[in-house]
Structures are given as C-alpha cells and as structure tokens.
Length: 94
Image (cartoon, rainbow, N blue to C red; front, top):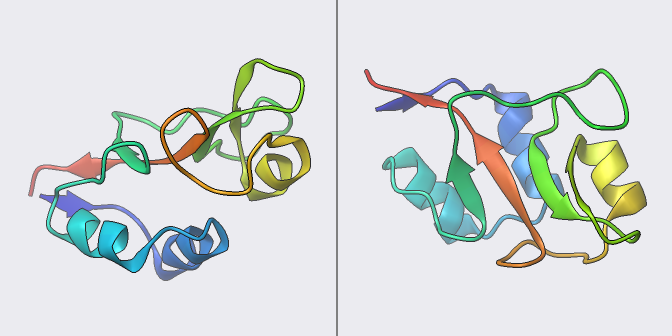
C-alpha cells in the first residue's frame, strides 16, 4: 500500500498535532482509529474550495469536512480523537 501524500501533506499532519506513532502506523498502512482514517477520496471543505482533510465536530454542533484553516476556525476541540476530529488519508494499493 502506498499513500499519495506529499511532504506538504505531512507538514499538515504536524499542524493537526497527529501523534508521531499515528504517522508511523500510517506509513505501514495501518491507520490509528479515531485519529487517521483511510478513505477513497478527500471531500471538499464545507467552507471553501480546498480539500477537507479533516472530519471534525464544529462549535455549532454538526460535523464538517474542513481544510486546516477552517478546522482551526470552527472546531469544537483542539485535538484529534474519537468524537472530536480525524484526518482523512487516501491510500492506494501499490
């Protein structure tokens, strides 16, 4: 399995404070439940035209797909985890 993330995407993971162990597991094709999820495609951010690489609970109650900027602006929680937010990653069989 290979992922299609670029170095800037891994920098983005650091912005989301993804634990190092979760990133290591992602390299092995084993995402960390509640923090990183493998999906078929990354949806568009619900607030702009960018990719919504984070699925998160908003301050207003509902969940949203968000880019880094809008996750930081509208998030209910500062961290990732079950019931808070998770980063979505596309991985292709390789």
